Image 1 (cartoon, rainbow, N blue to C red):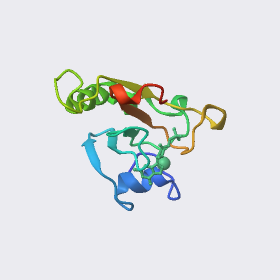
Image 2: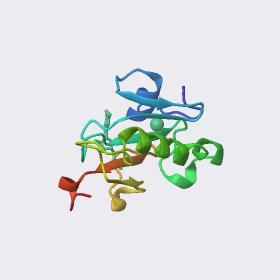
Image 3: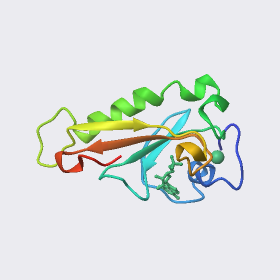
Amino acid sequence: VPAAHDAACIFCKIIKGEIPSFKLIETKYLYSFLDIQPVTEGHALIVPKYHGAKLHDIPDEYLSDVLPTAKKLAKALGVDTEGLDNPVGYNILQNNGKIAHQEVDHVHFHVIPKRDKDTGLV
Ligand code: 5GP
Ligand code: ZN
């Protein structure tokens, strides 16, 4: 159960296992899983186990392993490795507020792999 949680929040439900997800990495402070509507193949989300809408609402400890987790995901995607369909780059993205294209009001970081064919996508 997230330290602060909202029973109606879709990401709180995913963290609690009430809604299924394709889990990638879980730590004491975060839960990472595949995005249901991937912008590119392997699009992942990293979600702090604390319900807060915007980045500045989240205590620092719940953000402490976000970038290390993003690094692990990038390595697991094979960004540095020769491979037929390995990404050659990636975006780390985090939206705050409707004006900034946030749809789910529980802080999350996108990891969006980029392959040569993905040029031009967000
Ligand atoms: P935002 O626009 O808020 O930054 O991104 C929200 C993301 O959450 C979107 O990419 C959307 O596809 C993803 N998402 C929304 N609901 C679910 C869900 O139930 N499961 C998963 N895996 N991803 C979701
Ligand atoms: Zn939540």
